[in-house]
Amino acid sequence: MKKYALLIILIFLCLTSCKKEDKNANLYYSDTLLSQVNSGDLAVHGLTYNSNYLVNESTEPYMYKKFSYDAQNSLSKVELAFSFNAFSCSMLPGQSLESDPRKASISQYSEFEYDNALRLIKKSNYSISNGTPKLNYYLTYDYLNDKIVKLNFYNPQGQLTQYNNYTYDENGNIIKDDLYISGTVFKLISTRISEFDNKNNPYRVFASEGDPGKSTNMNNIIKETYISYSGTAEDRSTTIHTYEYNSLDYPVKIDKLDRIYGK
Image (cartoon, rainbow, N blue to C red; front, side):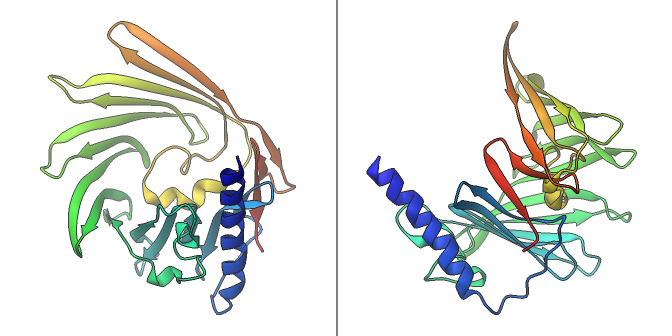
C-alpha cells in the first residue's frame, strides 16, 4: 500500500513540475476543448492544441502521443512513445523532469491516407526497432452517407483478419458494433450496444484518428452492453456511466474522473 501511495505522489509531481517548466510552448485553449483529466488531485491525462485548435500532444501515464497535420489540416501522422519505469518521471514521456516532448523516443506511429473528399480511407500502424519502421497492420474504411459503417483490419501481408460493422442512431452515435474474426469463415465474436445522453462528447477531438466509437460519437455513452459469443452460448455484461455537466453541456465529471476545459 505504501508503494502504491508513493507511485501516486510521483506521478503527480511529474505532471505538476514539468508543466511549470514548459514556459515557451505555444498553447491554445478553448472552453469547449478538453485540456486535462483529473482523478482527485492527480492529473491522469493532459492535452495541448495547435493554432487551428487541433490536438497537438496527448500525455497519459506511460504514454505520449504527438499529432501532425497536412496543409488541409487533415491528420497525417500520430507518433507514440512509451515508458514502463514506474518510479521515474519518464513514465510520462515528454513531461518528465529529464526530457522534452519533442525529444521523446518514438516507438510506434500511424500514417493516414484520404480520398478526394478528404475522408479517411487508410490508416497504417508501424513499430520502430533499431531505427527501422515495420508495418504492424493497416485499416481501411467503408462509408455510407459519410459515416464509417465498416472498419477492415489487415495484417502486414494484406490479409483481412477481422472487421467491425457499425450501426448509427439519428444523431451520429454508434449504437451497435459487431466484431467479426477470420477463421475457416468470418465469425461474429462480439456485439457492443450503446445508449447515449444528448450532451456534447469532449473526446471528438480525437475523431480524426479513425477509431469509430468513443472519439467519433456526437454524444456520451451512458450504458454499454457487451455480448461475447462462443458457439451457441452468449456472455453479457453491462456498464453504466454517470455524468455531471457544465453550462455548455460538456461533461465535467465522467464516473469518478474530473474533466477540465480551457486553461
